[in-house]
Image (cartoon, rainbow, N blue to C red; front, top):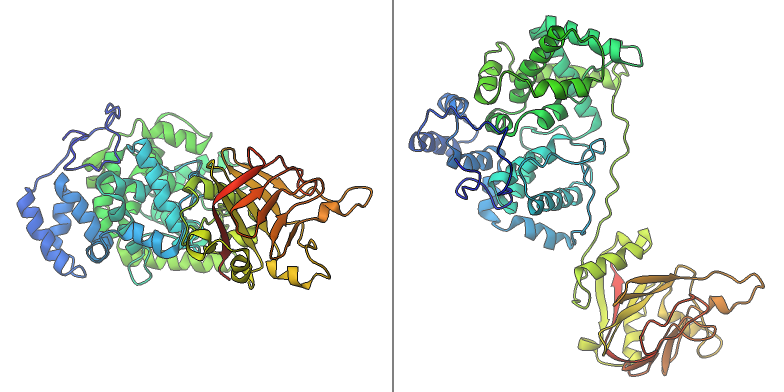
Length: 526
C-alpha cells in the first residue's frame, strides 16, 4: 500500500513523506467482502456490537474499509449523510471567519503543537482550522489533550467534512464518552490508568514508582498521580501505524482499548529501565528514548494488549468515578495547572464584500475586545442605500459603535472606528461641534495596513486633541487640529484626508483629496 494511494489516503497527507521508519506490515486476515458484510450489520444496529466484528477488527481492518469504520464508530456517518458540507455549514451558521494565524496548542496549553503525523503543510493548516471551529462550537471545553491527535489521524483518511462530523458526534453528550474534556477528568483518568497498572502489572508499577520518586523534586505521596501525561505520551511517541490500529479498536470499543495499550507499553518501559539500570532522570525523555526501541509494534502490540484479562469497561468506570470523588474530596492532586489557550473569535462581516478576509482580520484585531465578541454587519452602503449623508446618519441613529469604511477611485481603503453614536451631533449647541471618546482610531488597510490611535491630551491642556468626530447635513469630519483625518461631503462622493493632531496620522489618501467609489458603515449586533 503506497502512501500516495488516493483510494486510502486523503489529499491532506504529505505525498513526499519519508517512509523510512514507518512499519506498515499489516495482519489483515479478512477480505474486504467479509469485513463489509459484518460491518454493515453493525452499521444497521450500532448499539449491538457483534463479537464477530470485534474479532475481525482485532485481526486487521482492510485499508479501504477504515474510513467507513471510523465514521460509523464515531457516529459521524449519520451527520455526514444529513449534512455533506457540515464543516462549512457550521462556519456559515456561526458567522465566523477562520483567522490566518492560529495557536498550535488548542485544547492542550501544555503542548507546543499537535501531533501532525504525516499531514502536509496544507493538512496541518486544515487541522488547525477544524480545531478552531471546535473551540467556537464548544467554548466550554478548554482542556481535551486527545482531541487534536484523533482529529489529525482522521484527516489522513477523510476530508474536512468527514473529520469534523466525526469529532462533533464524539463530543455529543448522549454518546459514550470518547474524550475526557477537563483537567479534572483527565487527571481522574490518569489515576485510573495508574490503578490498573498497579493491579495488572504490579512489579512494573513498583519499579516505575521508584524511578518517578527518585526523579521528582517533590515528595511522591498517595495523592500523587505518577503519569499525568501518559495518554499524551502514547499518541506522541507511538508510531503512526500502531496508533491507526489502536484507533480502529477504539472506535468500536472505546477508551478501554487505549488503557490496554498503555499498560503493555508502560510494562515494557519498566522492564527497559530495569535492564538499562536507570533509576532516575527526565521521565518523558526516557520514555521517548524507550519508544524508539519498543519491541512490540503494530498488531503485535494490540495482541498483547487484548491478552490482559479482567479489564472490563465497568471496572474502568468504577475506578474513574472513585478517583473523581477523591479529586472532589481533595485527596488527589490535580497535576494540571494551566490557563486555557486564549483564542480570539473572528466573526465574518454580514452583507459586505468590501474587505478581503485578511483585511478584516487585521482591522478586527485593532478593535476593543468588547467589540470583537459581537457579530459585525453592514449597516449602510452607498451601493444599496444611495449617496446621501442624511441616509447615513439615519441608519446610524441607534448605533453606538460603528466602523466607517471608504474605498477611493485609486483602490485605497481606509476609515475610522467611531466609539460614539453619530446622533450626538444633534445634541451640540452649534453645528459641527466635535464629540466622541479616546477609544476612536483611524486606519488604512490598503495599500499599507496601519492604525492611528488617539494622541491623548496635550500637556498644555489644549482640547484640539479631542476633535474626534463631527457632522451636519453638509459634511462629516473625523479628527481635527491642523487638518481632518477624514472629511466627506454631503453626497459621499468626494473627500479629503490630511494630518490631524487628534490622531497624529499621515494622510490616509495618497493625494489627500479623493473620489469615493464606495462608503460603508459597519455596526455590531448587541
